[in-house]
Length: 127
Image (cartoon, rainbow, N blue to C red):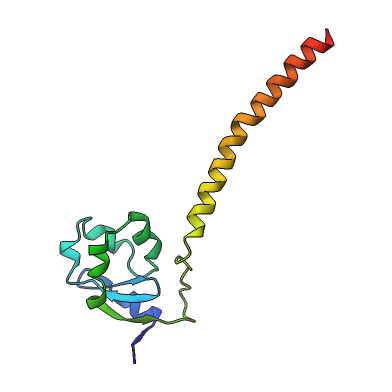
């Protein structure tokens, strides 16, 4: 049976000498890897003791980087602990943000052009 890691245990392993990282609900011991991390040790240490899934996914790690994780697995993170992990497995969240930005961009052009057209119509028909 897989080990269940508690929030207290995750917090206890948040130093360079003993470092656990929480990714997608799984806890990994990255102590031996921290000196080899291409982004430096500060990047990983900044995510110690909390859910690092979003930071991990935002960087866009390669398949090779993901292949390094299974041997480092300590266990699953407790489901009902003090730290609630987010549901970052759904790719729709970034798509919805992108869609909102596109709609906002369209609105930024449509509203001024409409006002400009209304102004010229008022000047033309009002005179």
